[in-house]
Amino acid sequence: MAVYTEISDSQLAEFLQDYEIGTAVSCKGIAEGVENSNFLLFTERGPYILTLYEKRVALGDLPFFLGLMEHLAAKNVPCPTPIHGLDGNVLRSLCGKPAAITSFLSGVSPTSPNLSHCKNVGLGLADLHINGSNYSARRKNSLSRDGWEKLFLLVEDKADHITPGLTKLIRSEIDYLKEFWPDDLPKGVIHADLFPDNVFFKDNQLTGLIDFYFACNDFFAYDLAICLNAWCFESDFSFNRHKAKSMTLAYNNRRPLTPSELSALPMLARGAALRFLTTRLFDWLNVVEGALVKPKDPIEYVHKLRFHQSIKNASIYGI
Amino acid sequence: MAVYTEISDSQLAEFLQDYEIGTAVSCKGIAEGVENSNFLLFTERGPYILTLYEKRVALGDLPFFLGLMEHLAAKNVPCPTPIHGLDGNVLRSLCGKPAAITSFLSGVSPTSPNLSHCKNVGLGLADLHINGSNYSARRKNSLSRDGWEKLFLLVEDKADHITPGLTKLIRSEIDYLKEFWPDDLPKGVIHADLFPDNVFFKDNQLTGLIDFYFACNDFFAYDLAICLNAWCFESDFSFNRHKAKSMTLAYNNRRPLTPSELSALPMLARGAALRFLTTRLFDWLNVVEGALVKPKDPIEYVHKLRFHQSIKNASIYGI
Image 1 (spheres, rainbow over the protein chains, first blue to last red):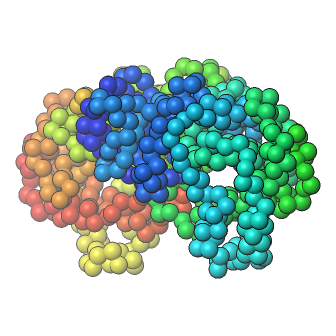
Image 2 (cartoon, rainbow over the protein chains, first blue to last red):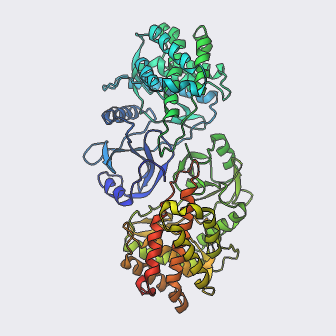
């Protein structure tokens, strides 16, 4: 099995002695999560998710992520709840790696999101922003204005091998956003990676938000801009205004956007497209041995970036 | 996700309409099974295993495997039970591939089998043989005497790259077994791949036998010889006589071995070692793109084969 780490039955049994959730009834490595090894663990108490944090996640950030999930879950945002060990700790060690057990969330990720999914993600994102606003810990967004450039410098010489002109496109966009990126918008905890595979639904109702391992403090509207990129384009890269309208109106109903957020939205959408273009480019050129998840083609975000560059104002996003 | 096939939420929803098990509550690709794509599927009724059969499994053999599981499960052998669709069929189609849903079995595979595991596998194997004996369908063992040679011819020129002398070792063993392989021993349905990762336990009790996709008609004692290879060697390749004794005595208690089976056991153990040596060698040299399962080092079976070559009679196996 090519999950990054294999857990033996005896290691698992010993690990579970530090919890009050019973003994293992079953434990299967699952193809979920890019950065970590995830297992669907059953004990007599039911299903849980067991996560081993691999080297791509900074150990120092884990208390922020786990604390955030616990904070949000306590406020009924449907996200995994970290399970405390007998000593009270949620972050523990298994197979020599940091590990945590969280609650299991039901639901299935939508492969082709519909209008109802987009609406409910808009509401869910606003709920996350509202309920996360009094979370006390802080984490800088390492994948914002400065981060894109650092990452791009590592792959700049190879970008044109993917598609001619890519280096110039990214370089000029980095320069443009450096100049025009907003520096004063409503801020707080954002998810920063709320793609369809990180959201579960049952009968179109949102049942789960997962994978908080990019969460950080940044502009709320930047998170919405990420979702516009992630949910509102079709497989032929065309923008679906109806989906965008469903999402932004729902978001705005729950957490009204300020005039400055509205006018910044096209710029934030460009930044979000650039963020995923640069990270996908990096991952495409640096495949991780043993990953369950194939790198995604960066070209998708070339099309998305060009779309956002072409628009005049936020009205195209339905708001 | 690098499960061989991805199932969309809409494909899954449509597929489940042909069953009476409710709608999908969750569906996760799991790192289990070398040949197929496996998913842990939850519906309102509970957990199931959904399997998509990839090209390495012959479509024509699937009714044999699924029918066998149903036959054995009906006789309380703890194996997956295929779930019938509304039209009565168990073998259906999903994402353009043959697919089946089976019951979910709890338990965890032992990483380091102990004496109790070995004893219970011996009993479970005998139960499988006894209860499978009146299963009416038949399937030839394609990985027996003739099969090894065919497979080896495909990799013969590369074997010495793995370790010098490997070509000669395998070639002479094939010739030897061709001459001395028994041709009249008690026969019936055998599992033919009952490794620790295909057996689940809970508190040392056997709770599940899975992965029947090598099952066939062959000598019962050959199945026991496979288990001796799979369960009774330590990680330093030394043979553990205590484990072998636990297994063979338990098996013999439930299904007494005949004198001819006993005297053939060393030969069958050599054949079993050769079988896994040749298939592992082939897999090692032909890695499947997108597999969740890494190929296993064939060298392990060089050591096992040499061990069985060195012994004089079956007493070393504890019987």
